[in-house]
Structures are given as C-alpha cells and as structure tokens.
Length: 124
Image (tube, rainbow, N blue to C red; front, side, top):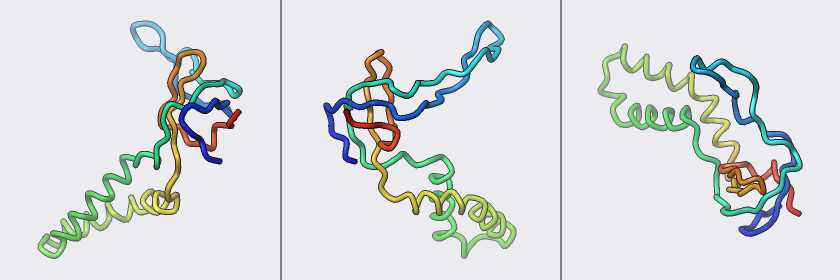
C-alpha cells in the first residue's frame, strides 16, 4: 500500500501513547491511546522509520572500534567489543527492517500523529 500526501486514512488499530498523569506528584491515573477507526489526512510521507537510540549508539561505537580499536588498551577494546555485542540485536533488526515508510497524519480531532508506520493506517 502506498500512502500519498492529502489522502484520507483511518487508524487500523489502537495506538498507545503513554501514561496519563494527574496531580503535583504525577500519579498515574490511566493510559492515553488513539482508538482504531480515527480518521485523518496524510500531511507528509517519509522514507524510513527514525533510528532508535540503540542503533545510533551501535553506529557510534562501531565507528570508534573500526577507527581506533587497534590502538586501544586490551581492557578498553574488550569492553567496547562487549558493548557492541550487547547492541548487535537492535542493529540486526534495524538492517532487516530495511526501508519502511512512515507518515505524518493530521487526525480529524486535531491531534497529529508523526512518524507512524504506514501499516497502522488504512486508505479510505
């Protein structure tokens, strides 16, 4: 399915947004979500999902390792290798995901859903 700017879409499933907080202490009183069936208009179509913090950290550490790993003391190099190994699953998932289209949708209730994966929207 290809979404285009200006096309009307419907949210295909409930999307959880986060906890609802109340009071000065910030007590959790519920959970905020957008319900399936909500409609809106596509404002922008992007090429890929944004990289996660873990993916960016993997790229940073990998560059550091590739450029300076051979000059590092053994303990530092080992620690860096362990950090890279811990982040490898997120990096592999990012590579497997490939190019995923995301969109910005202005919902009829005035809310804006940005960076939404195209698979959670149905064209009307």
